[in-house]
Image 1 (tube, rainbow, N blue to C red):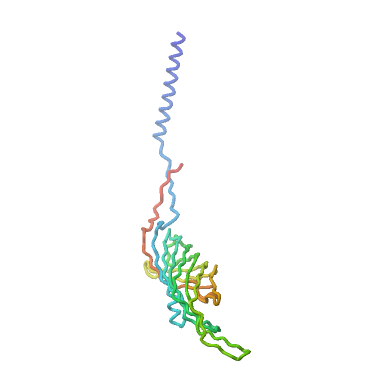
Image 2: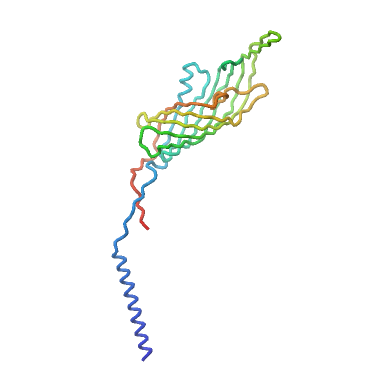
Length: 251
């Protein structure tokens, strides 16, 4: 009799527990889902936002006004989020100039140079016509040069030696540049901009009888400042984000 009673109690207990769980499950299913929140994307532009090709016009214009040396270059930039711009600059440098207050003519043969680095755009989420950026470059070049029309005077002997030459000189150089600039939109994806560069010469190979006065890509060895004025065109790679918000369930 006692055993039968205990079995009845156990059956009743399990019926009560099962009913309780069933009610809780129904309440959970019937309860309204928690409100979803929306998280705004950090960037208005896609990761691959375009390729930017540029051509520097500063040296060609300076040559028109009498400068007899210069760098002639083009650049390629990958636009990432409109914020980061990995950059490759490639060009040629040449010189045929008699430096002021010097007793020689420096002839730098046409030589290739490269600069690699990155730009950072402070106005990366702006649709405005202007941007402001800073950047860093590492530059390197190998080149040849001649020093001609050397004039040496000897006050003691009152003798003047003209037309001496040192030819077939070879050198190579490396340098770092920190730069800042502005860029404005002229029409759609066509842009123009100024860049000011501060340069540190890491190393330049000197020869037994001479030192390079002009370094392709760096410029006049005695100057630490440089300027470029360029025209740019952007080739789009991705569509601009329509600023839709990503839906993230609230925990």
